[in-house]
Image (cartoon, rainbow, N blue to C red; front, side, top):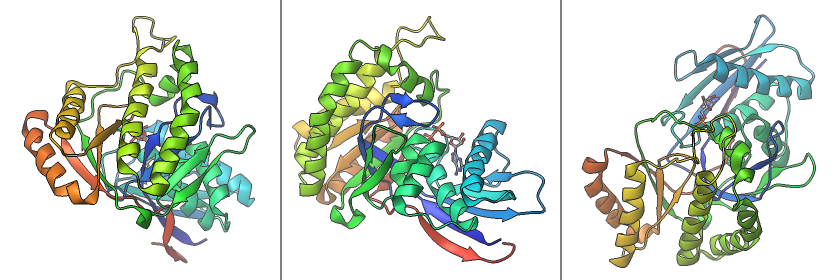
Length: 337
Ligand code: ADP
């Protein structure tokens, strides 16, 4: 069968997904909006081969953990079931950025695997079906399928997928991600999702999200940066308020979930200061210490200079992105590669 190579980018949520209505089928409780990050790429090749005794998965030139391989095999199993084939597959994948530190390699990883895997199995799924399937590998992977800005509709039944809100060229927004050496995460995102409804403020967040989604959707469509930035910043804090006030059943010694590190707070303060000084920058944060800084194209150099001055103290590294493409096939060929 043909070897197919696909690429995908991780996506940055502007309106976050936090809390699931179905943990197994990765169905979210709320809609979310994201933008693909052009500066980070996963490239994945899949080839089904009837002579294999099991699936083989290589990530960045090495055999990944048992857990990561099992997750990939479980996803290939879904693809085999859809395509009506039984052959195992070889999967080679490369992330151009660090894995497992909060830049969403799981999203780009499962988006690329879904596209390469389905095509290698002889399927030609449309964007919705690909997005739905990618979601089963990792919830937010569904948002890495469409090009540019995406909206993930939570849905009410089994159907839940992301659709394009605007193409990448719609807006040359600049996204500067400041990330730090991996710290062992006390609580995984999965546990965070599970614990979210225990926060006394969770219902209030869900109620407010309708307005936030409308504001962010409109701000993206109208390229209204000031409105977008403030809404996105407040939305990120809302997620962290939920995390900090959640109860993790298995870890009763924790009063809440704290994803921030001192560097995270230093950057939050820096952003407030930069805005007061006239540099319009906003931040957003996911379930980890990394900080994503947003600005318009004309402020990119000023932002890079401002953040660059803090790096020696903070010890972080930078990844610079604009709105990225969705998942796409880059090579399709017969035989070994
Ligand atoms: P993050 O998504 O922020 O990088 P997570 O811990 O949520 O961190 O996800 C990392 C996991 O995602 C890995 O341990 C692995 O299971 C999976 N993953 C990462 N990259 C890939 C890839 N290219 N292909 C398949 N799975 C991947």
